[in-house]
Image: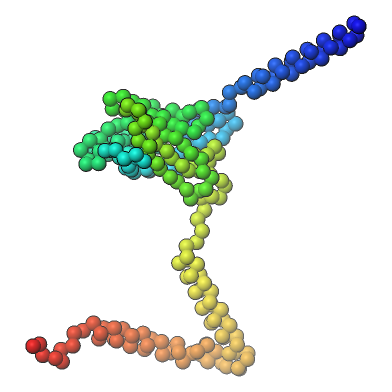
Length: 253
């Protein structure tokens, strides 16, 4: 009987400690993203990963220029995440509200008040004119080509909301190599043209030299065409120029 009580007591004690440990772990708050020292647009997690909006910054002009909110009102909104900008009566601001008729400008976000949420999915600004404040929701999208700016506008009295969607809003930033851009269609055509001309010349020279036994300038493929090419170009210019001249053979009526 004593053995049974002793064993059961140990089991109960073990389970108690286990549930207490699980409760502590589950009850822990997630690690917070704290503002990076010396920055108003980046925060860092305890493991060293960051959310850094500096690649989106527009320097001394708003990266996200004046845009109407999703529910239209009489104002438009501009935002720059890192560097203060000035526009109209908005001086050294992070967020500016402008009337559509350009008659009024309001500071609705002071850059020095920038504060990230604990999870890093939003950044808030206060200290605006007459107590105005703005929340910027940060939406992570790993596609490096997707950068969206959406204005929700006023959500309560003197309180405004914007949305920025970007891979720079993701914890750890954009995927490695995502900033590289592919060749444009025009660049691909130019490369193909150069390659084809090279193959045409080298292949033609080799064929004429060893298959036909040509020598000298005769090894150049279609050599007669290339000799006449400057004259053909000249004739083309003369023809175009003559078409542009008015015909003076008729007298005006």
